[in-house]
Length: 425
Image (cartoon, rainbow, N blue to C red):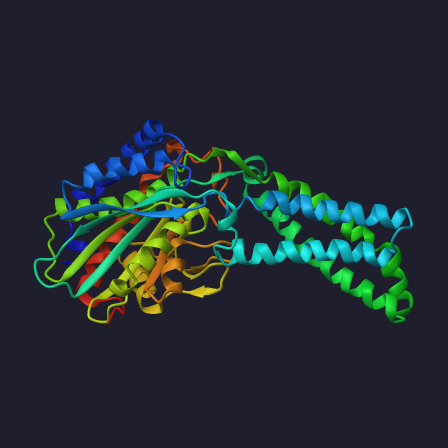
């Protein structure tokens, strides 16, 4: 079967179902902070539904520290700010000279940038041991084939929602970049200025050295000011409703199995799995826990396995397959990414293309890092969108047209994977 043969009514009924259910989940279960009871209750709600059309549905527990991923920004901002202030106060009082004021500021920036690199840019569980851990859950539902399992495709969507990012709420996506990237850029610049000042203290650099020693503190003053938006950018007291990011992806996984059931599609040798994970918004913790727990199974050479992570299906003009992930440091499988892109083109999404996640990551990166074939499908303005990670991400913004396009792409991907495998031979 190809997507052209798949019943249109089943897709449209599931789009209506998803839109209705997303509103209900938000209203009934409230803020879904990573690892909290609301996430688990929402997953239980999904389990009751999937029990009706899946051969097996179960929960898998793991531990995560929800605040470890982003909370470091607050003490980091204070640390750099105090270092700059203390250094220059001591210099003004004549206790230390100007070079050491720079050294104090630069050292603080180096420490913070080191932590930010591991925790926020490449998503290592770098600070988790310092934060309270909770028990989170992944929900796994399976439709088994009629015969021996020779292929397995996993559709994944995360059910947790993000802490609110104030800069996007107040200044929109275009305001987020200058404030956050500005803080990073000036912290790096402070480190460079520090090194130059140390050199100028021992080596005659002429007019340039004099300029550095007399005026470079202005750079540090800007860095100090940018610590204010760094400190305030994440509101840990409020969680986004997460209608688009990522209940749309969650229901893409749920409805993929539901549509196959409604259409009476039973594969001979392809197992289809919906993996609803918690913990994406605290650093891909749920996807990584699932991948590690099933690593031997997911990399078994006798069962070709691929994972399609769906994350935000809203902005029709930005339907893309993200082959490059995790701040452009992880490259997803080309063959499977091409299979998904071909599926998008097959359902009429001619403008769909490969794209890159230059800042941040999707759950697909957690799989690819462990050698599991994976890629990411998303439809969101990468500016980012003005509903991203804030209270505007409500069910009122759902776009049925985009959801339908996403559902068709997912189904086409499953059908083509069954026929050709991940390499799209």
